[in-house]
Image 1: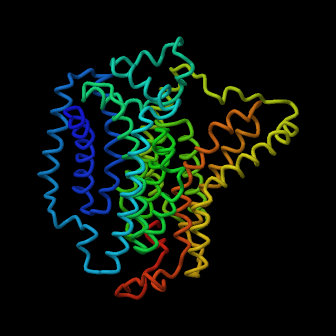
Image 2: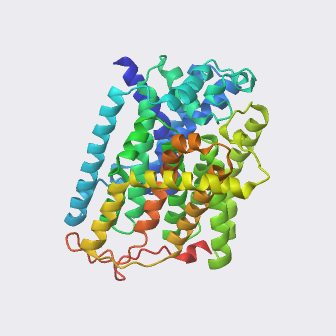
Image 3: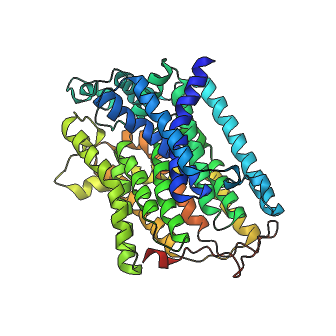
Amino acid sequence: MMDLLLLILAVILPIVVAGLLLFTIERDATILWFAIPLGLLWLGISYIIFLCWLQLPIIVYCFMNIGAALFLFGKSKIKSSDIRFPMLSKDRTQNKIEIITLSMIVIQGIFFIAISYFHPFGTWDAWMIWNVKAIHLMDGNLNYYFNQSVNNLSHPGYPLLLPAILANLWTLTGSVSQANPALVAFLFCLSAIGILYVTVRKLSSFVAFLAVALLIVTPQFTLQGTSQYADIPLSVFTLAGCCLLFLNSGHCQRNVFKMVLSGILLGSGLLLKNEGVLIVVAFAVSYLVMTILRKWSLKNFLFIGAGILPFAVALIYYKMHVPSQDHLQAIRWNLDLLNHIATNAPLTISYYFKNALRFWEPIALVFLFYVIFKPKIKINETSVFLFLMIGIILSGYTSIYLIVDNPEFLLSTSSKRLIMHIYPILILALVNLVKDFDNFLFFPQPQTPTGTISNTFPSGSLK
């Protein structure tokens, strides 16, 4: 019981610090959901910097975090009235929608806990790649990862953010408990739901409910979360970075803090998995295309880049010094490349099709939503940007499958999980296509003082 209390305290404290920091700067309760990934990011980064590199005593590290929490609490002057709970809203229809959404999240959480209870060790990747690395990090010796004799089964070339988060929790609690990685996995899943909901709720409570339903209706979200893969955390950081970009747009002003924070969260993916590089490149290319076509703000892009830059530098340094045995080394540039691609293409397409069928539940939900409510669809800048980003990510993954010598192993082990990288932002793109939020039969939405709710974020804020 004491170990569980220590674990909860060790996890909650950095999240509280992150939440107080966000609220002190932004004074917006909506942004508090972003404190979960930001707090977990701090758990990993602070462990590498303060406990591994500077080798501070653990007691100094703990008091440093407690002091930061107390300082920010006094600085934020937060009040209970600043945070609105669903049942305290004045709109009854909105209350019903949010209570239904909350019930869905609770049910999903129960399933998550039940699956984690029967499978506490996650999958092979989770144990061999992340948990074993975390155990070695607990010694505070980073030189282990720059040793050529490291077991190749643990993929020494993979970044260290997730193992550092686990190592920090195990160090603070004093025991290597499987409750720690399970709790981290649960928090990442919870933050994905919360961030998606508060972002889409700027458009409509009902469509926010639909977005959450699309995310958790597929068992793949829960199964990949309980498997403790790094794919869910990567999708959370990607979603959070994109959502901050558009929450800033909705404020009709240039918000430097949100742009830099968007870059920090996107950059965090670089230290989670190698695929984080492709996601950052896709984001950058998509933004630059929108800058050319729709005159999006280049200054905002530079602010986002400033947030990404420290993580890019850290990744380059790590990759320059660590032995790498990743699967991408299996690529062979054959002279007859076209025939090589033609051979791999049918297998790649078949795996894509089979994995798409795993998501039949959200596909059916979208179909029912369209048949019942017959919403009007409108293409807008938000969706164009996100679809362009998704297309670049899929093109990058597909190109690897097409040129690698033996793609079947990669496709069988990774293609299903790679879909989850883009799935949350795909939901964000789809729900943003819906035009009329206030004409649904069962959940009428209140009108704003200037008319009806609009789903297109003002592009003027990006100029």
